[in-house]
Length: 195
Image (cartoon, rainbow, N blue to C red; front, side, top):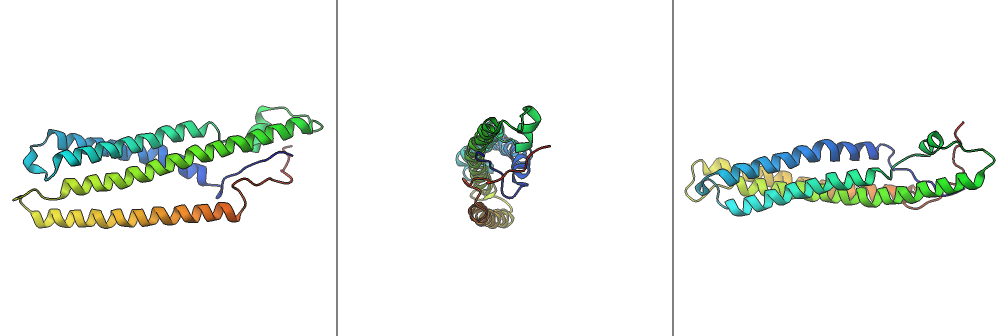
């Protein structure tokens, strides 16, 4: 039989879909809305309005890239059951079955490649968005309520660091999980046949 691939953990594609079709668009919209506020505001309201605008737009573009990469990658994600649903395979035709399973394994590798890039863009986008929010809330010279704005900047920075550490942690955990279970490029010795 040919190579078959499956996600580890099995719920990963659903989580990736939710991230790139719900969270990423909402965060990109928030980044662009905040960029619009910065662009339309008087310069004395922000310490670094130009930097804030640039960082927020960069965050939005990274998040939009994650959406696009995910959409592109999703065409390569399908299961063994999808093969049996779309092709009427004669059980005696092991060559066709092996070829279709091999194609599924190759396509899964493509999905992994582009989905991993989408995840990297999402992580970069959220990190840059955090930096953009920090540049927006830092008080301007002589601004009012500076202590509260500095506290907000500190809180966002704390969340930014926590998110970065968590992203690195789950990246490592996911990579180890894939390797432990032999999913990166392993052959499935005896795939379950569809009735």
